[in-house]
Image (tube, rainbow, N blue to C red; front, side):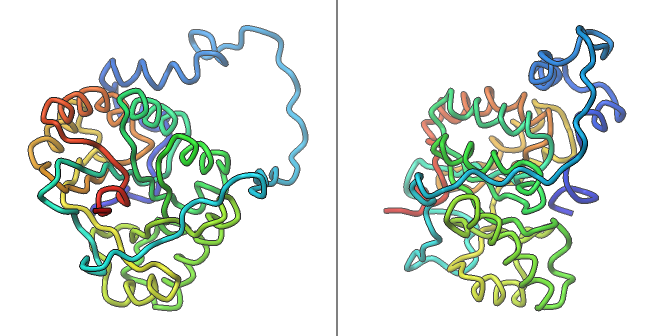
Length: 276
């Protein structure tokens, strides 16, 4: 399996039950929650009764914001893109959008600190739960795409089911950003089956995005292993698969970006990677 095992990535609490993570990763993730909890999880102040449940807050209106870029065709590129041109020192770091939003924000902040831009392929149900992250991604100079609505094994679906998974996520993206997203990547599959390719094209995506470098960060191998997995295979034009929702990924980002800079490889969005 090449995407999140068992669906979307585990929360930090679930990760904690699997075993102690590397100290650097734990520090980054824990910092996102430090303002709300004291040591041992006890509240520092009086507890305010929770408000009764109500309807989800509507997404921020987009009429005063410039709509996000739409998908575009790249002449000369195959429908299923696995990498960019090999003659330029550019690479694309692409992230499967799911999991705890604190890790997503940490990854984005690390990328921005290094002047890197990334591509996020968001799961629609994740956007439903955290709609503010769509604009957080775009406002950081990154690009946002479609990774299906529920992150199920799309290659095992009927064509009608696959089309619904793609278009349901596309509708969320359009509502939040004014665009169906710049890219589509199939869920739980590195390569899109021909039937999925047909439905992606029907939904308005001129290309399906794959990758040629797999970080394997979803296996939680430790930050050092994530860096080795990427830097051992990356070269000009590479498209790298990474994930939000994993502390090892957050901890790996500074070292990974430093190594890319040392090799004079510039981390850009996938659209920038393919633009002459």
